[in-house]
Length: 356
Image 1 (tube, rainbow, N blue to C red):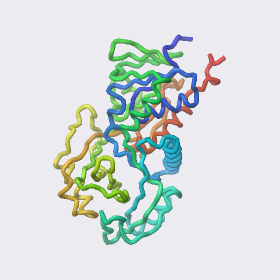
Image 2 (tube, helix red, strand yellow):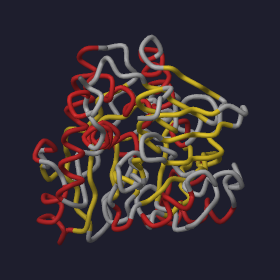
Image 3 (tube, rainbow, N blue to C red):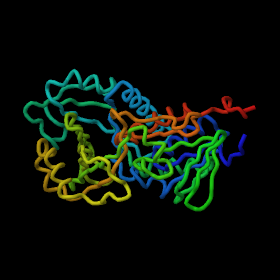
Image 4 (cartoon, helix red, strand yellow):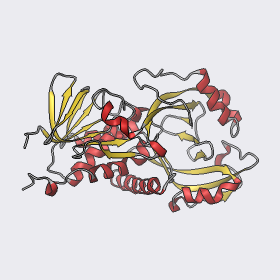
């Protein structure tokens, strides 16, 4: 058997990569784990994430993942009250004919109940729409949370920031990673959690058969301070939401941009006139009074799996290389569940040939 530098290498230092590292070490405390990040930890999609968790899912699997993650974050917050995870009530707006479907989509914990208007009055209920209040919503400062997770992991995992993986060669007994520093790292198993960097040369050919794509994500910052009791407003039919971003002192409006197959390394950082027009077309249906206050925002991208399903898959026949991600813009929301699925594909010490 080939000698390895580490039992597991996790490639990608976003919230998902940190959650996967944490899950591996929770299950196998004696394992050696190296986390590699091309930039600084939390610098990619995690830095730009709105961090909003809805208690819902478009399929039975995603609903189960959302429930798992919700319980995980609740336990994490209870154990660490200082973590930047904040409970938030929500109002859901949808077509009046969609109530049955809405109750299938949202978890029972949401306890949806019909109301006449949106709490706080930030948005109106247009003709043909109805409103429901619900529980189980929360949001986080994902970048700050990722930094805290990384800090907690550093005594037991090795971090290599600013180190790109430029080559990957899977052999019968180990996986060799070539690094941008000129070094190599040999691991028993490798987890790829690259966020939207699906086309990085080191793993492009391995990942391509998964059928994942990269989509642009746009959110406008509404320069109106939220009141302490303001709720999130979910526009179910448009897959959009208003988030009272209390820690930053403004509202955030996220809508579904349909610009696909973008490159995270060449995507323009700023909001374009077309982005703003598309966002305001949606916002005008519910809160036209906010249009003049939408003067800034954020643009990035994320990976999306076929059928809007997150992907957790072995990429080699022997399972030594595993892909985790393509969470459809819900990387934070589903990270604990994706991490658990990923760890389930990796060998525990009792399952490794050299465990004895």
